[in-house]
Length: 488
Image (tube, rainbow, N blue to C red; front, side, top):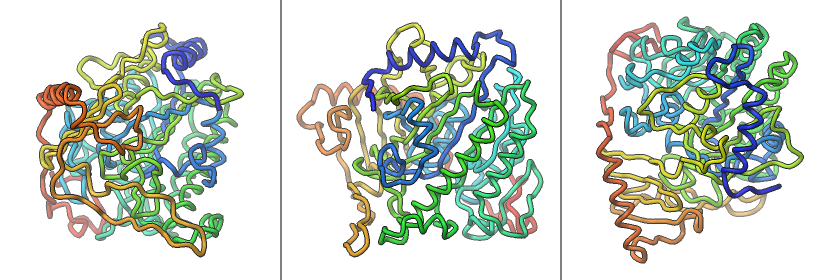
């Protein structure tokens, strides 16, 4: 694998190819604009893809990653809703009010409507916009739901952790929609089969003279750990039940990815397509995921909770060897980057950076800092500036390094919560110490002061976290047993 350690060369090559083939000038005709397929895995760990861990059976993802650009420093948020907020708005969640945890069932929390979402802007450029999968960005009022935020069609669920077969949340309430209508599934098919079939339907019915934006935030590999036995059995050598089931879920997702890309290819859509694959956060070690050798897990600000497995692909970037980018990219950057390729100006004030516009001119990347998160409820923060990472307050509930579970006949490591009541500010050089083993707070006081000053500037622009408690008016019992908007 050919390693490129600066983003400039790699992204210059990539942008030149895209500009030549896609025709991304602001007044480009619709037929010249690239189709954009944005695939989001749910709770996928750093070590749960084949290009990081050869024991993972992800042949379809491996192939596209190897022919595209693997993003080795692609950052997401520590939880589901905050990352999806970043993808859809181009803003860090502490600028929208979604920085604290996730939107729980029955909470009247949402992305405020003064933030225009990506699909609505893409429609101004002539795109057909479709979404299949998990929303998790607010549903207490219809105006916060997908077809009111710019999607032409929607098939999926509003909340965050449904049963794959019954399509109910853990506390009850059915949650599956086709546009705004309740989508019945009397056969209780696995979510992945439903989502894949619907995606194939969208692709088969798409008018190829119109550019396509297809957002695919599938439920896999989020808990509950449920997968058909045929996938789990491919990992029969793994002793730990949760890990074995989780790995089967990853392979099921990979198979769906392969079926979807094959359908796109059969219609000729891949000839002019930008394909993005990313996770929404690090893997939850208590549900079988693995982020080794990174520290931490989902729900933490450690690299294991925020550095995501990701790649970008187009047929015009095919290489004999894959490129690996170590340049920083954040979830907010997809918003202006995609809009640029579609010929749409994102407007001023967003946090996202167009990663390809400057680099196409041979300039260095202008993503040299970002906010992991600023949560004034938890009094916890984390920011990055160039090689340095500063954290104040608790980084989260899983603060160790978690090796892979052992094979049959061997003892497993424990994955217990190990939160501490008090944490002093911490400083790490992530380039030199990506596993976050050497705190530099005491040995580099000048760097520490510089980072604290930067943090205070970031904090000054934040908005209070939405922290509204569960509203009993949203209880599905009030809506025929179905999670239904209209109560806030």
